[in-house]
Image 1 (cartoon, rainbow, N blue to C red):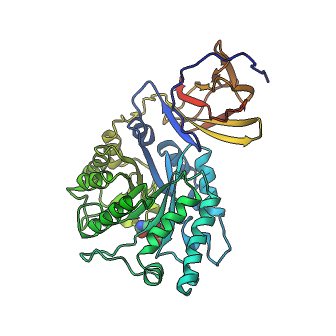
Image 2: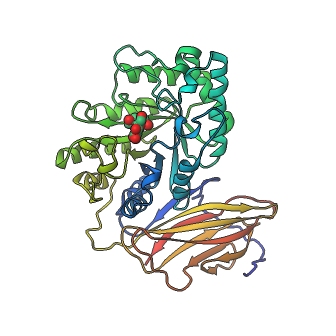
Image 3: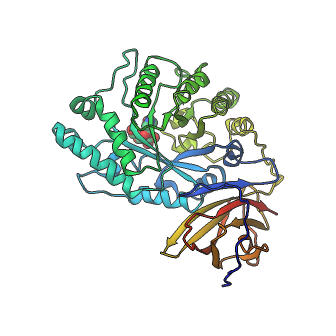
Length: 444
Ligand code: 9MR
């Protein structure tokens, strides 16, 4: 299409976009009406665990796409799924989830590299030095495969015992390599994908207790000695035996004060009705009160596929209807329910596509919010030395500098609730490979 060879003017651009990877931005003139949009308005993601084998179920995918901005593969990135036999890696199901997420601007949490469970039996048979090699090889191969595509990795999962001992849990890694396996895993992970946030993830560590104290001591020691760790995941599986702790926020905050991000990684709360709704709201408020609490993931989309489905612990029931817990989470996030009235919103995500020596292709995906929309526009700004030499699947208009393109649909811009479309363009880099700044989406 048209080449824009105009000379540069200096342009003040807002740095909306991270330098690499896929970024979701949502924009609307109205109060946000989905979990993802309202969390984004608070600078956070709202994610869910997903299973590849449910993505083909239309209401599952529609709920996922409309409400969530991050996914965690529930089982597909575990050791037994990726390397069931030594040295032979099978990425099919995990890649399917990744593709689903990337196409819609969702972040992906990697779960999990080193864990005692869902570990193929061959790992447990290795002698120490061979086990060390196998562990580092697993981390390296998997992180390389997903390099640049995973927002945060659970590098080590559940390495501490329950109860008051504060001890490390017995596992092939602990028993043969000693506690040093944890820092070795983090160092290997950092060396492999320096862009990924590296998390330690555990359960029963949500409040201040002996187990969380032990994790705290480890993280503090890692920070003091320069062992690479960026985040701590709090699984947050709650029920009447293990309710949302009164000191949840305080516990998240003390970890954040060590200089790591904190994330709620597997939230589910058994129960129903208003008591479940109140517990959920309290959990969300605890995260919002901690500035380094960067996102919340619930452990599944619908009660019917929950690992604790009998406890109906999630936000959507088995028919994908929103539960009172959904409404309370949305309200805690500052969103307002659409009430069926139809607040028109859209969100946008950017992903770099092909890259050559002198140019790259960019793709922007536009996703309607929980109401249908009839039109949209998205502004794309490039660096002053760059040029956009081609566009597709949209009708661009340009400002006087040729560096700011406002893209509108080709023809009919209608999208169903949760529906997506995308447009693309080629950026001539002229030596500057910076990604474009992609503004918020405006819906009509
Ligand atoms: O939800 C997962 C379930 O489908 C698996 O059968 C189970 C196997 O261990 O793992 C569940 O997910 C766990 C997660 O990976 C780590 N924290 C506890 C989760 C619930 O058991």
